[in-house]
Image (tube, rainbow, N blue to C red):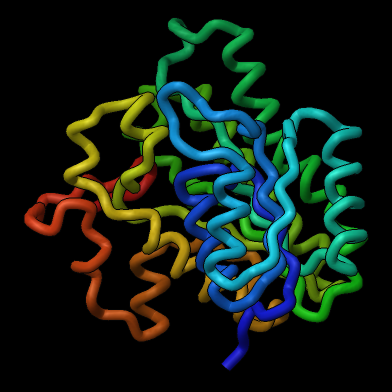
Length: 275
């Protein structure tokens, strides 16, 4: 069975939440994990830093390189990719996980706020992908995985918070475009999105604590990401994947252990997913 042993996985926004969980899943295979995020000091309300995750990665069996990184900074991203490649001899996988959430309609969106989410979500994905490509071209099974939703143009998704939606759909369009641009190089580019909301500290802090009981743990996203990243890059590219249906295709049938609250049977379907 393919594994990520000795593969170098560069994960943005990986100081907590889904990014951290993917990092730990890769570490259990003995991967080299680059924890690239802004949080190098403890946050008063959100647990986790690049250093705490690095320690967890090593404890799980991987090698770790924590890098303080703002994905909006061109020079810093280029330098981080070079640092990762120098430390581990290359880069095999990029996970575009860094993202900013802001759920408001146009009339309540300050342009500075829009510029922020656009620069992190869409531009950050483009920048990190662009800077990783020269290294990915040299890898044996190279993947870009972007955490963004299927492009769903249903009216129910267009009226409430279109500024945020534009940036997330922009990430997906970039990922699907990269799949075609890089197909000849054998570099896979796919997106991954959760079927249900995911219980992370950021969601609890930014949205509604009540959602936590109706959510799944980040482990389901990490398991889906792992299944993607261990697939032959020439066999899976240009797809907008959703965690549960993708894992079902791979033979998973029991999803109860992913519940954040084992007693809850009323899970909240995530944004952009039609029931």
